[in-house]
Image 1 (tube, rainbow, N blue to C red):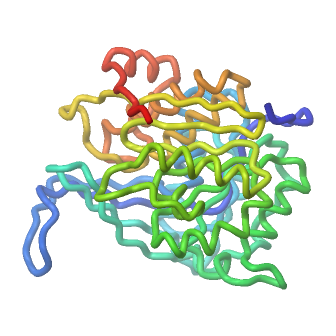
Image 2 (cartoon, one colour):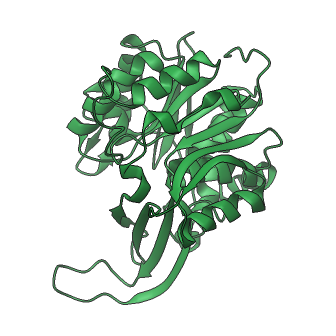
Length: 344
């Protein structure tokens, strides 16, 4: 396990936004109409989702926020969400005259699949200077998301991007680092993330993102190639100093560590009638896995919770609104049962 130097907790830094979720009766072709069946507004993006999922899982360790939002209704909603769940938001800055980043998530009732429309807001002006890891005693830094930040994605003071000094600063303060990705074009993912690998301790990603970073095709005709995911995990460990690589996909997940451990586990067999949306499922998986790692659980128990947390999240259009205490997540998963992970 990763040594913690006496530190405790998770700081969720970078991407804080507000999601406007709309469930539509179907995804329409261009210049046609779909009906909005319901809509809601709540916090979103990787940092919010990790922080709130950890709290809903029952984390008793500190959960801190670092982010830049607008001093507007959306920014105040994020601040209120932190207060309600006991997330330390002293470094969640509400900047006057700026707009909070917003994602419009359109969710098809027929398939549960999501389509996103994104407004960058404060993500467009956020810089490495907005991150101060000297003010947290957390054990882990969960940082995101490369690909949607104008300044952080670009070169910064001699570094290939603003993400590099952020990760360096976190490590300099004794934190172990993980980065959250977004499923953009594979070549763009690789260009952004490859330079970050020397500064990361963990990488918890989906099949498409893992393949993009590793340069291996892991999704073919919309289906996960599980052997290719295994190869991607191995290559990522070979070509970096990562301690852990975790790859999740609809049928399951795999974890590989630098000391040679290889854990694989199928996902939960969630009944279709219980699925509202997959919005936030990947974040909930990462939260469950990180919860277990923080608490020094076995990797097998941790990945079970990761899948259970993701399965629970599917019951709501909100990203983490349906995540419950870790004990209940595991009971729910055992009640639904587990899929079979493909061999090979």
